Image 1: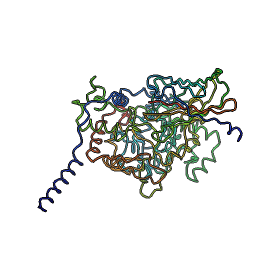
Image 2: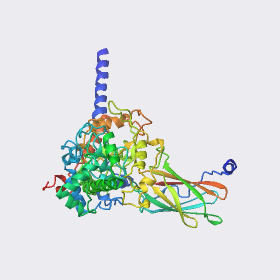
Image 3: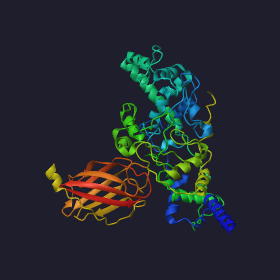
Image 4: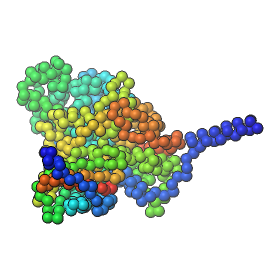
Length: 421
Length: 133
């Protein structure tokens, strides 16, 4: 009798565990009208045209994109001659690098974000410390762990390289002589570089800053060409029949279930919304700090840095009028933003591991587990709430994520170094 | 200031159309219990998420258009206990009783609420506008 009871308990336990891990309830057979509306809002068919960047007059100039294309792949823009923008933002990895933390001249403190569709974002960097793509492009050039070069050396390269000089002067005002001495100078460099910068006349400083910002604007023009391609998800949504039936030869039952979870129980769509699966906003989701680092303040500091940046939309190097700088002028800076980081796109997310601002989470399924648990934040509070999803549901969500991968829609010529470089 | 605050009259307002189909319709309307009528026209048509834009806000009361009022704006998602991603402001009275609100951006689908405090002729009126995106 006792034996029979034990066997029965064991059997029920095993079956229960198997159900918990491997079986989900029946998938919904039809999307509701509200769900269908949400699904259509996620399709690339709903992607508006690239927003204009009023702070960059050459943002959509082909010649500027071509100059930016050359600069992007040019490792001469680094102190050791081996680091280019493409060293971390690799086209073959959806413009990421596959590493937890970026490695340029030295190891950095943040994970390399994808550049796919980034021109749609009003803010740049994980903490939103830059308000334009061109202003963002300037910072890695002078960062010690990234390119570790400076604006004077860059201006000198543009002035002395015949190809660059011709291309530059076809877009921007003719270059004036760039001083050969000092060798290196920047207001953002080390003590020697700052002192060298102070030794330059204000006119020389202004000339160098102009060249520097025009290089950033050209790099931005190039990066606007990096746009996502239609994935299986887009085809699925665009072919939902009038009956709103969920079944389709384009999606497996598991992918449909994952998509339904994405919209409803898992609430991923709260932040990963719109055709690029991001609201471009900043959220604290309780991700652990990178080993050896203090928990970062995130957007709380980022907006303050952006406001003080001489290269921001309201600054002297911007081409925008004050009335056009609406994101910067009306940005929020409350305590809600402590520890908040930017929502990344989920387009091609299965190709861009590891994840989070410090590459803290290695795999996509671990990301699902993180959101399922919603741990207490090290700093401020985690906006996400525990989801209580079962392992099988996390795998369904992961299956759905795979439907968001597709080759880029960009002209292939932008995805490799220029042929004449 | 204190006497002014004493005069503050915060009324929880009844919203005439509690959930507007804001996605398709760029206009929202509500009337407060003390007779203030607010009409919003969104520059973004249809209204949606992830795009910063402006609103035209027309305010009238039983005496007519409300000109020269001080208006503060707050917004958020009560269900999620968070505010707007931006800090909108009234930057101009475009014409008598019509105000320009700049810097509005919504970043999630769902139920949104905008709260206006209208300071006019020594009294404060709070108006709450609920809508769905």
